[in-house]
Image (cartoon, rainbow, N blue to C red):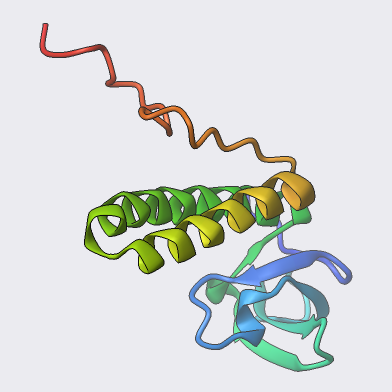
Length: 138
């Protein structure tokens, strides 16, 4: 069943094109297809920057802070995996590059732990764990 968003709901642009659109917005105005329907045609979102922008209903989806937290966890995990791999490669390539990459990785892990409560175990060589790690072909 279709249910349009209401004033004050939080929403996100599905395919953001600039830094403002990556932020969570609040529904500030709704334009309906006809005066006697609940089918929304367009939403106007107010962003934390103060900008208001109008989008077709198909380009906007509901969003919450919990969605932000989940997306940040995935982004930080991916960044840590990439930095961990870069650090291992840099170890044999250049000592200064290796120590700088390790420092950046440590700061990223600390930030993820402090601000998101995310525990990233860099000492575990199999980190992050995946479902298909069974020790070999069987």
